[in-house]
Image 1 (tube, rainbow, N blue to C red):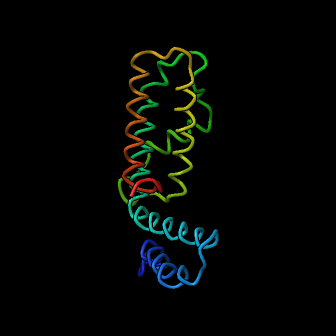
Image 2: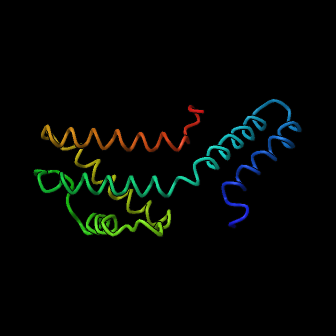
Image 3: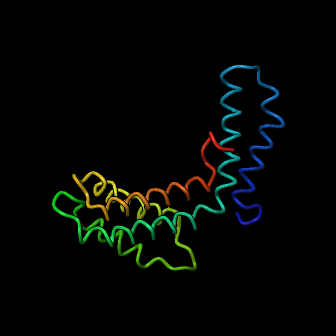
Length: 154
């Protein structure tokens, strides 16, 4: 699994499909699907080496922003339940090295995103909360764009 890496294996699969399979298919839906799969495999191969660090940065950013906003949030904001407490604790305990697994980071990140979404839905957030949420969303979007997973960006 280390040599070749998962990213190298995905890129190799995409190259093999492009070099051998696509030319065997007549124009139409089947060929289009294989070409789409090739493009997806190449995007994933490019993003895979950066996924865990970006996800870790996202998770820390979400937790830091929530840590500032939750104490000041009013009624109807994201309730601090056991799942959110666990996600905040997991984010606070993230080591710099070794990096946690993508699975663990994803679970924590998704719970924190749900809390952010609840805060964003609150009626009439304060100016500080609104600015903090907008800044967080801009940072999240920037990191996601840096992975270059979108089929619309090359």
